[in-house]
Every structure is written in structure tokens, then in C-alpha cells.
Length: 478
Ligand code: AMP
Ligand code: MG
Image (cartoon, rainbow, N blue to C red; front, side, top):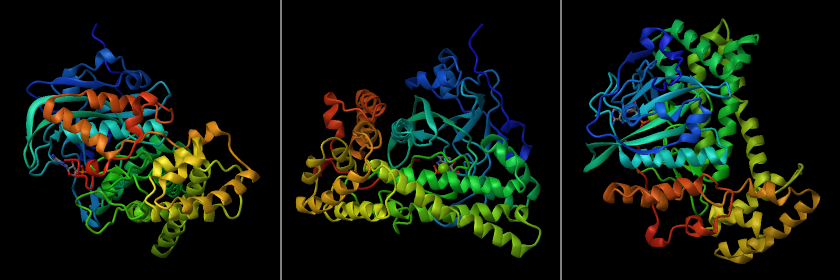
């Protein structure tokens, strides 16, 4: 008997107006680029069940119930009541070895009723970018969707120029977004919001079902997960780039790696997305934007928070005000670990900010500076345009470490040697797109699977871009 994927599709059992039943559109000449067999095994899927025809959408695997999910979203502050999966198909869900239920989705799998005038496809470049960056995030230990496979379609997609097409198989704790709640709330469909809430609670926060106010407990959980997530992003120099409400999960996983980037020289105002002219989604704005998005989620739940309007708003505001202290504590925890500080001292935040402002003034590479502190602290000073700027701070740091220091190994585990540097991602994409050469992609994925280990053979991958290699803008994932 042919191996099968053990699907159990809870989203497909929700009311019909939650989704549109839609199989993937077959492609001309599917070819496997990469199968993440380790992830398949974690998910309890026999890799043999993941044939290239299944991963390309040419065959609907047994037990799959392909559908496109409905959602809305605020994009750069503007609300669109109907977005939905325009180029993705949820095949179904599996329950992994860890007991966790996860979605298996094909992205770039052809048009759906939500495609509007677009083609429902993905170009090879963005598929490779999402594969590389989402798997790196997983290796960093940051909550994220995962990449189970990438396949080339053998077809062209037309963007500004013709480009090779590809399909990514994405794995997520769920694809429920802030925008999914907005979709139903904007239609005045309170019954659907309640159904979605119950489903989301069952999947992401079963304890909330037992709370006195399940909707509130659920919302507080989302706030806490997002606050913790954004702190992790900041600790890596990560800029998501397109934090629209349709790109923010309820699970607390990072999702939709479009114009994302890791900064090199530390700059709190860093923006890479070529469409983010106002810097709405700049590095240091991300906590504020997360809170703004969570306010939009709270609006969808207001009727479930309390009986009268005044009370609803008060409950929502109180819960939202929980973001700042959770974020602040998570941010401090992240940077204390990065600086190898054990225990808690009153001036820790000042010490951390002192380093960051010196890094900003001296164009110090974010990743290399922290890695140097974790390995050879004296070598950090050379990363500063004015090395003396580091010396003054280092004295205070050594004095603080004398009060409580983490072991070297713990510090290394908080400071990766390798991140997906933009020029390396672009290099991997260019080789694959222009020469059908997946070597650089494979090497990058391999190096980033062990980001905290020194890998002398791959020293080049730890270094910032040379001036001529520098990537100044990234483009949306379409
Ligand atoms: P994104 O910017 O990738 O988060 O997508 C925003 C919205 O546009 C979602 O509803 C997507 O499904 C839709 N979309 C993006 N690219 C395409 C495409 N090539 N074809 C159809 N829909 C798309
Ligand atoms: Mg999206």
C-alpha cells in the first residue's frame, strides 16, 4: 500500500463560509528542490508520502480536503474586508509526534476564489527566501511557520519579467490570523467569530476554555505570545517588513516572509521593504505595530468581552496594556542573555541601551558584535567605527558581569554566528533563478541549520556584505 499522510482536518469541518473548497492547479513539470525529511518525521509523515506530485499540487493526497481560507486584513493601515488565500491551499492538518496539530499548506499552488486578478503563483526567489529564513528562525528557536518542501513547477510566472515558478509546502500551528477574526467581525457575523474563537482556543490555548472569560483569556494569550515573539525578533535584528494584520498569527508564530530582512549594521530605523515608504514596519516600530494589530483583534472580540459597550472597551484596553510589560520583560530577558548577564540589576536596561546606541553611532554589525562578546570580547571593539566608543561601555559591562554572569556556552546559544544575511539569500536566489544552480541555496540552508556553532569552513557566511554586495531593498513576496 502506498504511504499516506495521516490527515485530520478540523478547519475543513468549520462552516462552509470559512473557506472555499479548492484543489491546487496542476503544473507542467514539477521537480523537487528540497524535502525537509527531518520535519516530515517530526510531523509523523512518512517522507515517501510526500511525492513531488503531491508537493506540486498535481495529485491530491488521500485524506486531504484542499481549501482556501477566508480572511481580511489591514495592509499598511488600510482595511480590506476580503483578502483570503489567493495563492495558497490548505491541504489539511496532521497531529505530530509531539501531539501538536499543524496545517500543511501549498503556497503558490494556483488561483482560488480569493485571487482577484492575480495568478495564484509564486516565483522561485520568494519561495527560496521563505524556505531559508523560516528554517533559520526555527533553528534560532523563534516561533515560526516551517518549510516542509520546495518544488519547481517547470512553468514561468510573470512579474516584471518572466521568472521560474515554484511551490512551497508550509507548515504552521495554524494559519489563523488577526485578519481571520476581522473577516467575520467586519461582516457583522458574531456567530462566526464565536465559532472561530472556539476553534482557535481548542488549537492554541485550551486552558482559556476553562477561564471565567474565555474570550479575554484567549486575547491575553495572543498578546503575550506576540509580545514575546517581537522581543525575539529584535534580539536577532529581524525586520518582518510587512506586519499587516493578515500576516500576524494567533498562534504567535512568525508568518509570511516577504520583504523581510536581518539588519547588518545596527540601526533602529532600518527598513528594507521597497514598498514601506513611511517606515511603518521599521525595526524599532515593530512592538508598536504589533500592539496596533492586537487592538484590531480586540475590536473583533468586543461583544464577547462584556455586556455593555463601556465595559467592553475598558476590558480591551486593560488587556492591551498588558503588552508593554510583557514585551519589556521579554526584551530585557533576550538582551540579558545576549550579554551574558545572570540575575537582575536595576541598570540593566541602561547598559543594554548604552551598547545599542554606541553600535548605532558606529555602524557596528549587530550579529558580529554580540557574537564577539560571547566568544572573544576584545575583538568586538574593531567592529565599531570608533573603537574607543566600545571601550567605555565594555568597562561597565565587565563590572555588571562581575555581579552575575552566564556561562560562555549559554551566551553563545543566545548569539548566533550565522544569520540569513541578505546578500547570501540574494546570491542563493540568483544562482537558482539564473543558472538552475541550487548549490548556494543548499549550503546556506545547511549552515543556518546550526547557527550557534562556529563553522570555520563557512566563515564567509558569517561576514557582512561588502559595500558592493549590500542589499538595500527587498521586495514583496509575490
Ligand atoms: P501577502 O502580501 O503575501 O501577505 O498577500 C496579501 C494578499 O494578496 C493575500 O490575500 C494573498 O493571498 C494575495 N496574493 C499575494 N500574491 C498573490 C498572487 N500571486 N496571486 C493571488 N493572490 C495573491
Ligand atoms: Mg500574507
